[in-house]
Length: 411
Image (cartoon, rainbow, N blue to C red):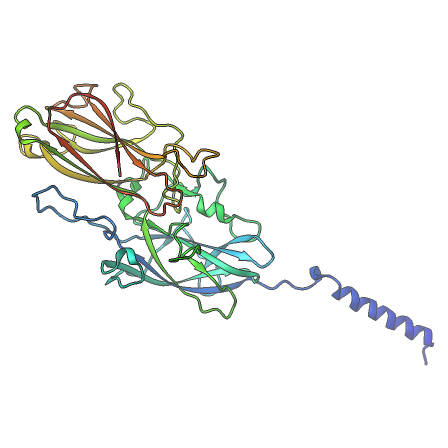
């Protein structure tokens, strides 16, 4: 039976309308899935490359510092999107399945570190021995990613309380609508009450403001995130903690009447220490000495030398150390104030304040609340500071120590 012409016309019109509706909105099209990107990386550490001479007392053959290879990595890829905005990408395995990360977002390292001589890749440590870790990281990347930035930290022990610090909020959330680049850069960790205290020298990261020579481009940048890109990264990681190297010497003519019996650094940073912004930790006030508080609750202490039960050793067996010696430790540096508003030249100094408490002539923390309290101040006003300071403090005593307080600014 032949259909009327107007029936055929209606059917054609209905088919055309259906096709038009199916193509009239992007929301009707299947979204392009995220893809897995393989990123070959060469991570480099130079543990003793920026610290100068060996840490030992003058005249003492001593020993060099001992560093241990990291066992944990914190790896974050932040990508810029074609339509604007950024996204933090999740680590996956080579098949695109999410990796099982530790509770603190860390990845347990399974490869090996290799020692080699650094060439011209990193001028700060040219011709020094460096340690390299070569691997491939896989990320789940959105199809609109254009440029990426990789931030890496490595540690011998897991970092406690790794979360955006006081200037950020919440945990790291991956994918669309998740965390921002600022959340990654504000990641902080705690030192107090953890194994991290004795492994600060074994913590390394990529400073967020370190740029390729002569440019303003972050050195962990992936310039091309397209599927055909063959980018790889060659990254040097740097110490997150500052090294403080203290040397003391009592003049020979004073040694019969005066010797040191206790030295301790106090009020060290312990909470919310920034991982990728190690030169930007801030305290709003300067901690002050208060009575007979041994190790204040607002900052732990590090004993450089102690006798008669306050430290290891005895002055009877090693009295020379009370006249001269050398001790180093690592701590997280902090500024005592933010840059003031309306001061674009940063003319107001911002200091890293380190407090040293000293006792003499067999006095101990148990026998006196008095002492010699020295505030050592390191200028950290430079707005573009990248690396944490490596500080050497020389204490020369040409007169008998008089208890009281003093202040000293070092370069």
